[in-house]
Image (cartoon, rainbow, N blue to C red; front, side):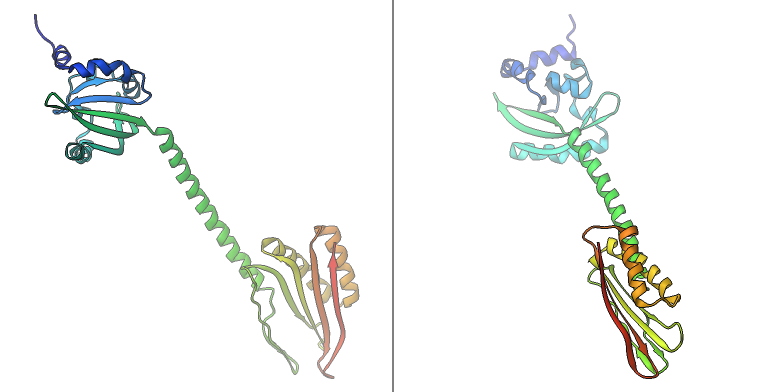
Length: 282
């Protein structure tokens, strides 16, 4: 009667292994036991489930035969650690039938029995963790991309906001200098230097409560409205009334308020006419 490789392995199986097989079968982790020549002596049902192999396809075979040469070259130093120190734990992949690779944590421990060495290897499936990490990395990349887009939008908004500050100028014999430095990259401030009749110079400074995008958007709306009113030659009193109505009817934000100060200067007589300060709020 001929003896098959599987039968030979079964005959070589140590007694202690036969005694603990039932215990290894109930574990939730894959377990393989190999001899000092890397021949697989035992694989529990969970390991078979993880790999998709049948038991007879594993028993008696060299563990290296299931890995690519590159994978085994990476695995060999980890195995050497086990032989030197008696144990090791590391992350790697587990070959699956059909060519798949399952991410696992490998815990390997060397034992001696009756002068022989055996390697007990436990495989913990970490595919869910790896998938979660990949999803997290993708989410972080998406967030980083979105952050870059937001930062670019803020840079553009800051340039637009800076354009609302008047440039230093000389009008008749009056010199006007301006400086704008927001607390954040953008804010709710603007100023206007305006002359409609070439005899009087209008100065106006506006501050919208708060900081950031919301205040900047409100400031831009008020800037447009204010510019239109000033160019029409409207008086400050009438302009304040219209701006106040505009804030209530068009913006309508509770808790938001706008402070606006304005003055008109007679350049020839060097007098400030119709100084005004108004607070519009809802």
